[in-house]
Length: 274
Image 1: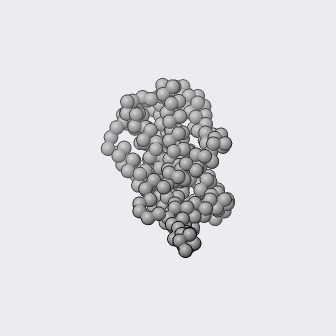
Image 2: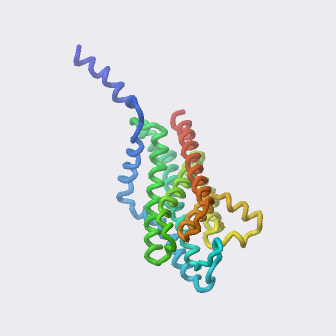
Image 3: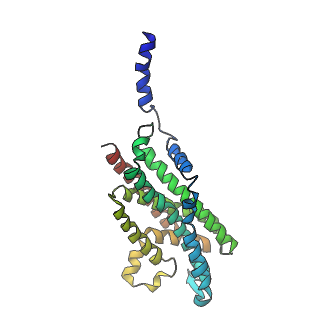
């Protein structure tokens, strides 16, 4: 009797998630992504090169033609102006790929999350784990780009030590919103909307030239975009143009990332647990 009854009592313990807080479960999904990228490391590092090439071609190439630009009452070289903007772009690139293409593939094609939810991990763990992985990738890109900036002498202030956590905020914001938007996509054709959003952000968010060149209505529109907020935050820290407005930029990015995380958690719950 005792041997036959044992499986009946142990089966629920194997199937149901353990009780108590789900602290630390999301790291299992991060570890899974690390293993998955061991052989595809080239895809992990490839997105870093686009902003680097822009820095070497446009930033350094046009520096002698453009000369100096005014920033907060100071005159700075054009290369010093462009570099922090491209750092923000690099942080965005690092986060946006895995929070969009990667999540869509796991959700719609590979059905990875269906298998994940058969383990003790829940929907919230999936959202936190994927956003953490996007943040890690964005941080890797940011560290590499900051190292290039330091090697080229483009770090203009001691406040630049805060550029890394600021770049992580940029990755957090784009990772959260990218994940949230991806949960509503139905096919690969919907990714045209991602490209349609990212390219104008990259070109018109103040990365390459100041907002004073825009008409007034375009200027207002650009200032509410997340990449501009990241560019302004990183440029202020790198050049030492410190002021209360930098806290506004940081809070904006943090709030955007949290909204994306909460929204994605709820949407994933409806898709995976329906």
